[in-house]
Length: 436
Image 1 (cartoon, rainbow, N blue to C red):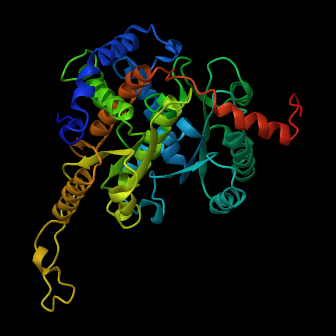
Image 2 (image 1 turned 135 degrees about the vertical axis):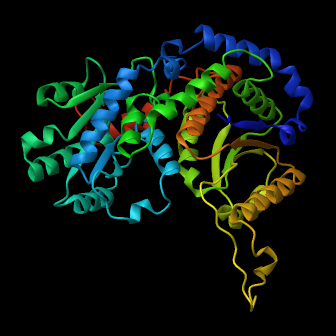
Image 3 (image 1 turned 180 degrees about the vertical axis):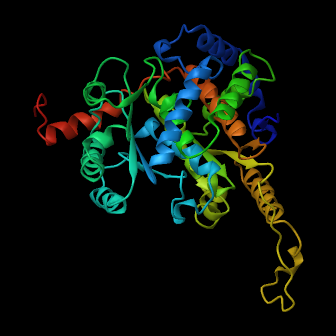
């Protein structure tokens, strides 16, 4: 199987001396991560998750997904942060760009998302869409009390029970939650929902390769075994410190750039299907590294679209940025630019060329311009948009995130700042137990 390729030549040239000097730190950070001796070491369950995933679990997830596929036209994935972003990233990358505009077909339900916001119109309009429809719910929460998904689940469960009946609704709701405690665990046990466990030692943003991500991905019709296999191969590739370890190289380079004054990393894609992969990546790095007054700010753009909006700033703005570009080597289809006799648009000079060739030249031209403009450029080539390649990419970024966080001197596996807004919101809403 082909693997993702990391090209650092247009970034390391900016910080070659600093990059080489950081190698001992990168090696140590990898060792601390693998040996479990660093801060947050009680949340390292994701490290050997791909190679340790039981075939029986995959079979069970596929069986649950098949039941939902046979009985639902829509399946709503209820969760926030890592409880939905990983699944949405993979599903969006693998589906037709216009899948959402097609009506559901038998045994091919649409996967929708809720609980990722507190939008009154969003939840109202979702309810309208589901009126009279066959739908199911995958609710994902360790506690069951996180505000956004708890509100969404309360509304959707009530609607499902009214439309399908309380007994039938039980077989259409799947809870992914804590193994023994929490409000959702209690509710699932009392109501008889099928459940999957979120491992105690896997944080939300690292949970896409657990049932949290695997079940919604399987419901969408994708091969979760191939996804796991890709991640498992990358797990083996990144196990030891060497020049062949792409995760260590990436972590080492981005820290060298950060220490040289590059405070913002822009994840770039040239394929619209990767938009939500960028959203998943932003949570992974923002929540892992942004603490103790430190951290590279993770941003993202969709090219060539955003070249016509953000391109000016990236080319000529403050030189505190570097780019990491996701490039898909081989599209799944082939389409060429047609010839036109009148040629009023002047496009005949590219007639007969594949559209992907034009896109690749836009990518190369952009890289040349930005590098010349003082923007270091890291390039990650993905063989194709399939489950195996995405599994590799997910694990590559997760492993690099752990190494990079330790090099930065923070605990990559906690998120103390996330609780600040919640405390204030609870006080303002007069939640019991919270005072002014």
